Image (cartoon, rainbow, N blue to C red; front, side, top):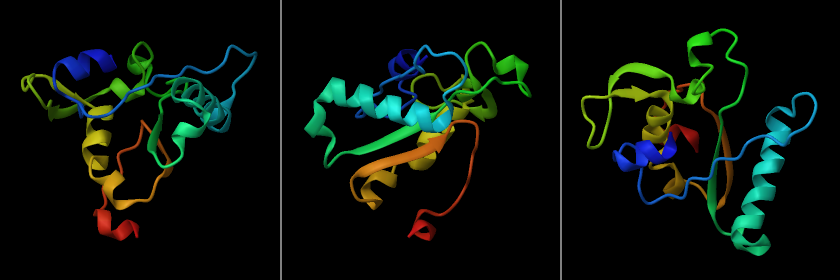
Amino acid sequence: QIALLRCEGRVPPHCDYVVVEDPPVEGRVGSGGSTLRVIEVLGQRYGEGQLVGRRVLVVHAGGLSQRLPHAALLGKAFGPLPLRGTGDAGDSVMTLLEARLMLLVDFPALVPPGLFLTASDILPIFPPPSLF
C-alpha cells in the first residue's frame, strides 16, 4: 500500500518508509512492544549509531479493527475518508494515513531529532505552534 501511495505521489517522496510487523509471538505485544521492535529494525537497517540525530515518525497501525470490520483487510491506516486524494491520483479517495502525513508534513522542522509516536486511527487537528 505504501509503494502504491508513493508511486501515485500521494505521500511525501523525500521520506524513507519502513513497514515493520509485530514479532511472531503468542499474544499481542501492544504499542510498547511494537515501538521496541521498530527501533530494533531501524537499528539493523541503518546501523546502530546512525539513528542519532534523525527525526523518526512511528505510526502505529495495528489493532484488530473490531469496530471497523471493513478496515480489517488493509488496516485502519488505509481506511477511506470522504476527501479527495492528493498527488497524481486526484480522483482517488484520501486515506487516513495520507491525512495524518499531510498534518505532520511540517512537524520535523519544528522538533529536535528523536522518535515521535502517533497512531494511524486518529485524526487530531491542531495548529502546529500550539505544540510548543
